Amino acid sequence: MALPLKAIAAKRKGGGYSPPLLKGFDQGGAMDIFLQQLINGITIGSFYALIALGYTMVYGVLKLINFAHGDLFMTGSYLGLTLISMLIGAGLGNQALLLALVGVFIVVMLIVAGLGVGIERIAYRPLRRASRLAPVVSALGVAIALQNSVMLIYGPRYRVYPRGVIPPVYWQIGGLQISLLQVFVLVLSLVLMAALYYFIHYTRLGTAVRATALDHDVARLMGIDVDAIVRLIFIIGPALGAAGGIMVGLYYGRINFTLGWGYGLKAFTAAILGGIGNIPGAMLGGMLLGIFETLAAGFIPQGGAWKEAIVFLILILILIIRPRGILGERVAEKL
Image 1 (cartoon, helix red, strand yellow):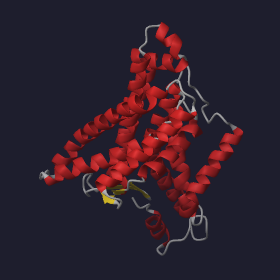
Image 2 (cartoon, rainbow, N blue to C red):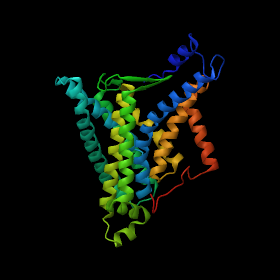
Image 3 (cartoon, rainbow, N blue to C red):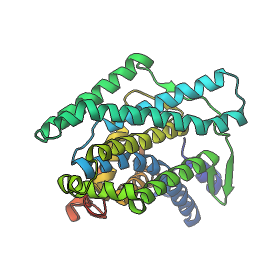
Image 4 (spheres, rainbow, N blue to C red):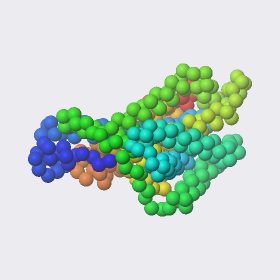
């Protein structure tokens, strides 16, 4: 979705666009741009946060970086495109399609969760007691296999999501513009993240997850089925990633088979930024990463070209100051 910087600038100055930190912006215009970019950044950051949760949960329980997770997110995006296109082909109108979108999310999340469980059983479980390098190589192999499989099925070209699935409704609040799609993405992301936080911290099964993250052998002595907990982690993480994949397709309008690499790298960065193995840290890191990115694009001349470099520079600085991330690495009792 295009950022409305030009529109804000034109409204304030009655003319063309110039970078916000250069001449020609009054204080109110700069504040409008800051708030608009903040909203856009939180929206984009919610994608990163959902994907980062998959990385941080797997690391918390298995001490494994699941490099295939970004491609599971990408697979969810393509499956969402397929189902939405089928519903439109069946003649569903806008209102019925909007209601059916809930079913699309559920079906895609279940399919990708099943794929995640299969990957864990075939590619990771046999290597659980191997050296740390072997599961990493296996994860990279799974990522390449998923990426190439999607390319062979859907083709190498960009695929476009159908328009109008979420009605193009906008609200103007002063100099800010908020869309129904942004509200939908933010509300759904926050609901999913809040549900995960509640599950991990306030349910019996969530306690078992935290106990397994603390020590596998002690968890077994306490009667916890560690293999079942690992399966659960590989259900929840890919399912959240799949939901994020559909949201990215709806938000940006087009997807590509390489989508998982770029978003996976940023989500992994978000997990490190917040504190790898820390669920609230993954949420916070994702949101901050999205905000850093959009503010860099909006407030720095030619920031759109440099935003990713700026984001990773900020990450390096934060890790120099606080190597364990903003909230710290918590892989044990608090996950």
